[in-house]
Length: 176
Image 1: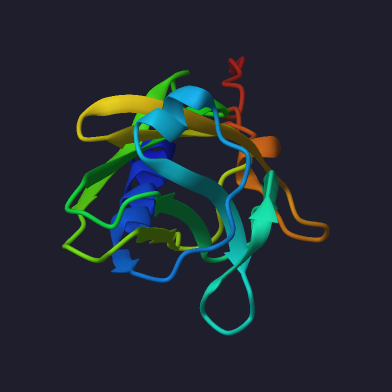
Image 2: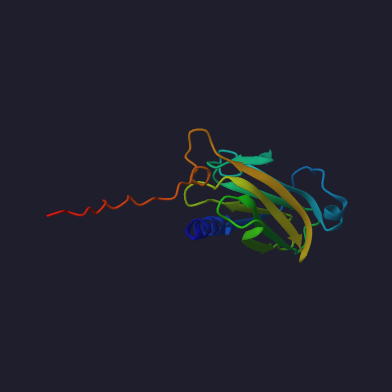
């Protein structure tokens, strides 16, 4: 179990590998009043669009959706610290509410979009996850999502069987 948790943590660390900021803004999505007051215009999770960029917003992923994106669009293009915590809510072999990865990016003047992307070593582990978004140190919103096994893709967490040792042969007494 410990090895599986370390592997999951290593995979999620890759989530922080590519962070970028841009000044183009996507049309506003519905966000909470608190998130809007904190400067978030839009935040969403997305699959790859096939061209190496974030596609349409989604609420769940398959374990072979690689990479995944978390896009944060700010309402004001001023320097802002955007932090993302990737949390394992209910994942086999991982303690509930484990912060798998935490990464942040400070935007520059004129930048209003932050793209967090992640790629696992092999495939994602199935389960329930959540992304918490912080603006300048304050939690402003979270995005719960599911990572489901892809059809035909082996998901070790769903079918883990501990190895058993074969029994040694029985010793018999010989009567001489």
